[in-house]
Amino acid sequence: MDGWTSGTIAVMAKERIEAGPAGKRVRENIAALRGKAQQSEISKRLAALGRPLSVSTLSKIEQGGRRLDPDDLVAISVALRVTPNRLLLPATAGDEPTELAPALEVSASSAWRWACGELPLPLQPWEPVEAGFLRLKAFRSANRPHDSADGMVSADDFVKHAPLLRPLLDAARQAAGEAGIPVDHAIKILELMTVIGPVEDAD
Image 1: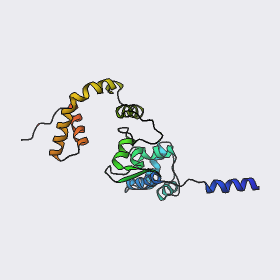
Image 2: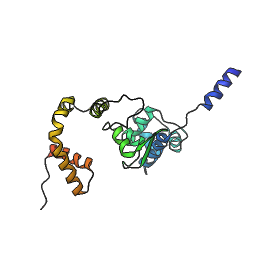
Image 3: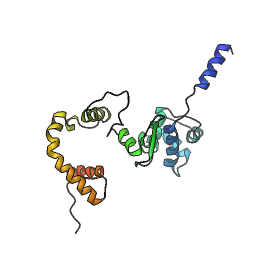
């Protein structure tokens, strides 16, 4: 082995990027979601998906001895009957700190809303400063292609109708407070009610 080759390998070894917090969450989530299922069973499912990974490889992944590439991540998600987000993020979506990058930490709730294309992360230094609504609309348009374009609110509609609908939002906030549930949860219930209709009182 010549000096250039050995030196290059040494530099590459020193520059190897270690798994970060997301990588740690992935391997922990795989082990937790696998539950009582044997690694051999998961290996069979992956083979059926055309992405064969041996039991030894799966063991190394769970123990942190092997990093996942995107194709492995997606295939394992399918095998475990979850989305890639479920492997990448915490099992809960509360206020607990969640590290997305070495210099970026948000709540688990914010991380999930970002990953699902609902709300952008806090404005980053390199991002252009723009109106909150326009930023949200651009974010959702880029990250929720499955949403109907006809259902997206235009800036003109927002400016025109937001003041008229403000009393409805205030009433929802008050009702949520009286019910002891988060406002965003109450709004989701209202969205469901527009689809399935109101639920009649039991008494």
